[in-house]
Image 1 (cartoon, rainbow, N blue to C red):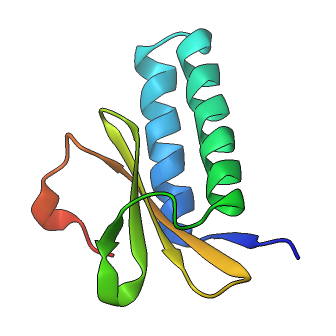
Image 2: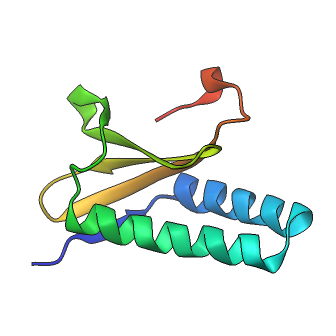
Image 3: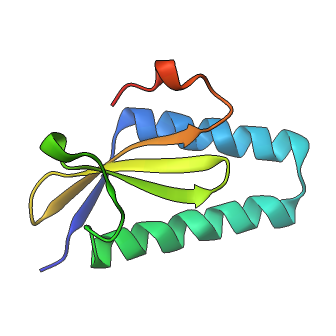
Length: 99
């Protein structure tokens, strides 16, 4: 059985925002590194959904530090589905983090 990864609209939006920032400020090597890291991280989560620590225990929300500036929050919905919630840039005000 394969676990389905669901990209929420917020995850798509924040992923694209981070990608846009990288494309303005950095070169293609950094962009490709970010894309590779996202792909590897999502596959790691698919293989072992509970690998990363719980951020909100009662909601099954996990926190994966992908980089010192990017945190991926995701929710284990059930044994078959994982929702990617947001690619949080740590430069942002943590009071605005809504999961």
